[in-house]
Amino acid sequence: MDRFDPEQSWHIACESLVPEAPDAFRLFCEHNADIGPNTWMFFRNESFHSSDLINRFEQSLSAGKYLEKEAFDITDLFLRVKEVPHTIESASTNKQLIKEIKPWLTQTGNVGAAGIATMKMLNLAEQQDTEVCRKAYREVKDVLNTIAVFSRPYSQGEQDGIRSGSQVLLPFIQKMLQHVENTLLTDERPKELPEVLAGSKSFEELSCYCEDDVVGLIPHFPLVTIAPGEYFGFRIEKSKQPVALIYDLRKSKSKGRALQGSVDGKVWFTFLKTGADRMDTIPIQEPRVRYIRCLNQLQSDMSIGIGRFVVLTNSDTFSYKQE
Image (tube, rainbow, N blue to C red; front, side):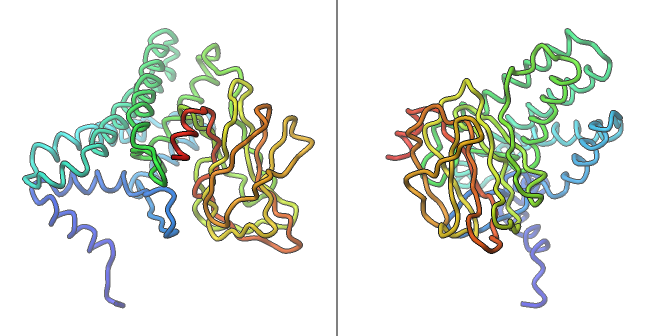
């Protein structure tokens, strides 16, 4: 076992499964590695060859500098991601495999298309070409809507729909949309966005997302320690009506952990059902709730990781989940 090389084995597995197009299949697997919330507490890194490049570009853009070489490389990445489904489907003779992964192939192509439109939008924003940038911006929004609509029928139980690039690529696209809204297309900026409640230094890098009928925190898989009285959570937009809280809190125990809601962010109440240790769905009976948090009520530190901490904002979705 001490000689086992997981990366080498992964490469060999990709070549064995799709020997006709191993590079394309490796790229596909790399951006579809996140298996989402699961009872086995199993986690895989995703987009591991791209995350440094994307983080470097994001940080520089936040500081006011547009890195042209990095922008070119990211565009090339999304072009390759978009072509992956066609390459695999046309080359592979393993038809049973293609049938099984077909939804993820489709979603991977959608993510690639969204990324290409995003980089086009950013380039136009850099040139201050407002109207053409607006067209590209709306193209990105349209593709993201396609991704959400395509994912919806597959969402059941622990399967959180068909998501591709969920750890790095999609969060990057969402952040770039917000960057353009905040810098050039300020009239496109939503009147209100979900907001992180980070009552602990351990969660200073948390970010929110709003997708279809779900609002919540982007997963933070590494375990962190929060002190007594510390918390994490988010604020929902006023236009959303909460229906249920769904969570997957790794290594967390319900004892001493309070799942709370608030209308104004000042007066908090603990949900009647405290929830199971690891994963659960808790109905929200008060439609005016705008703030959701998880609070450490113990007199000692608590270790916790966020696989999922979201609110459903559509009653039909909630009924489907409960079934």
